[in-house]
Length: 133
Image (cartoon, rainbow, N blue to C red; front, top):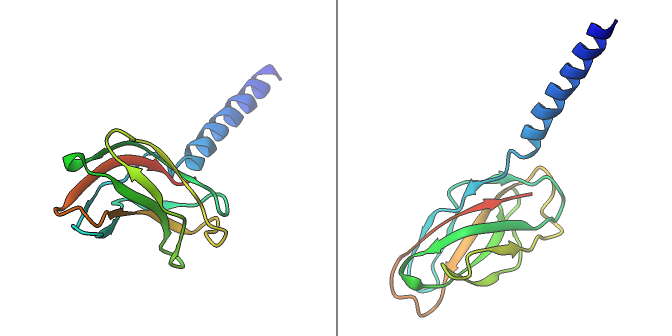
């Protein structure tokens, strides 16, 4: 009797671990992209799947080449909806919450969209990590 209980508990723990891993499948995505100069835009290398309608994304460990600043927002590739721009991301300000939008739904594919400023005369490389939530 005790073996059955321990076996059941072990199976339950294993199942929970597998489900937890699947729930965080959209964590630690690459934000890498190379932006064209003068208000150029590009999207992140990786995309994630939204788990919660309209939720924020989180960008961290960012490096922006040449000491420049970029702006960033969520971009839903499923329906072309975007969140609000988060301004002034740089190697110094290397993390940001990226606002969601009510029309970005759970199950939608999202990427990050970056933009250079008007006075950025060169291509800029962005690296970092992000979670789509």
